[in-house]
Image (cartoon, rainbow, N blue to C red; front, side, top):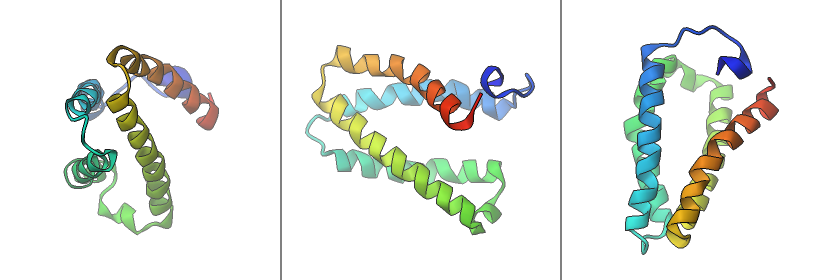
Length: 126
């Protein structure tokens, strides 16, 4: 956001669309996981990986600079780092959603946004 990182007020239509879709997709995940309490967290993990790799990643790559970005070592290092953190977080969320009380687990979503902004400020600077 411009408040934290500077920049102008102009936002692309794709950015606006993704900002609207993100809460919907994020809100569906706990409901689906709670409906499958007997599913192993790795089954949930593999399903999410499949959707991200084959459905969500190609459009993002095309919008972010094309396939040429895949030839750079920096891109692969970033992808591996983000993937490792994301996989760990998804496993933790899946276990929490399956084993936790619905009311308590839903509070994670409210604490997640300010925590994410705080991490962005600490990692990337204000």
